[in-house]
Length: 123
Ligand SMILES: [Zn+2]
Image (cartoon, rainbow, N blue to C red; front, side, top):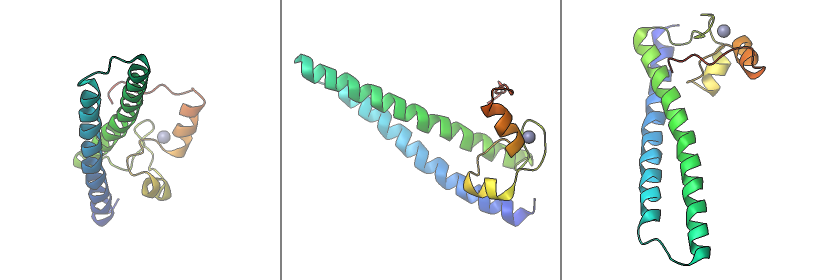
């Protein structure tokens, strides 16, 4: 992949990384805030734990994406960005444009969705 394209993806990924870091940090803070002054009323407590669960789920999602973004940045540094981490084939440019942190080519992604491919452990 030519350097200009890699640079453009790197910029996109770094922006996303920063945005996600902020979200993850602020949801963690909100989760802690929900703990402070826990209401004694049962309805309030239920609402509170629902909020926490929701925040936890959400920050989990963000955290996962953040991990993917960070490993994509690592692949840029290693010079393997844009290659499928399973088969090594080049990932379609449109796919990368849509989701620059994607790790698999379309074939492997489909295998993965059919459960024919195991998620690698080193993520
Ligand atoms: Zn592949």
